Length: 210
Image: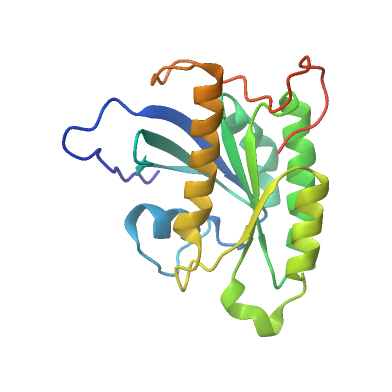
C-alpha cells in the first residue's frame, strides 16, 4: 500500500475530507494518474494489487479539501474485492484508455456497479479518458466519451498522465463539485459525515449515479 500526503498551507482552516475511488480495467493508468496528481511523478509501475492509498489536499481558495484517494486494482480477479472500497465513497473517477474500446466498455460496467451501490447523485463521478498522448492509436473518440458522459450525467475529461495533461484539472473539477454540493447541503469541514450528494431537489429514490 502506497501513501503520499499533501498538507494545508499556513493558516489554512480544517479541510473537508472526501473519499475518492479510482475505478477501471487494468493498465488504463489509474495508478499513474494518482501518482502524477499527488507527487507530480510518472513512471512505469507494476499493476496494483488490491488497493493503493494516497491523500492530497486541494486548495480551492476559500476552502480546502483533503482527498483520500483509493486506487483499486483493475485485474478481473480483484473485481469483487474492489466493491469493498466503494463504501463511504464521495466521488469516483471511471478511467478508460482511449486506445482500448474494451476498457471503455469496462468503465461502463464499473458505472453499473456504482449504480447498484449508491443512490442517485450520491457520488460525484467523472469519466476519464486517459493516454490522450497516444491519439494516433485512438479507438475511442472524444465525442464518444463525451456523449456517454452526458447521457449518464457524468463529468468528463481526457487526460495524459505521461504528459501531465489535465490531470490536476480532472481531480480539481471533482473537488470543486464536492465542495459545491457540501456547501449546498450546509456541511461543515469534517471527515466523519456522509454527504447527500443528490443534485436534484426531489426524493432519493433508488436508481443510477456518476
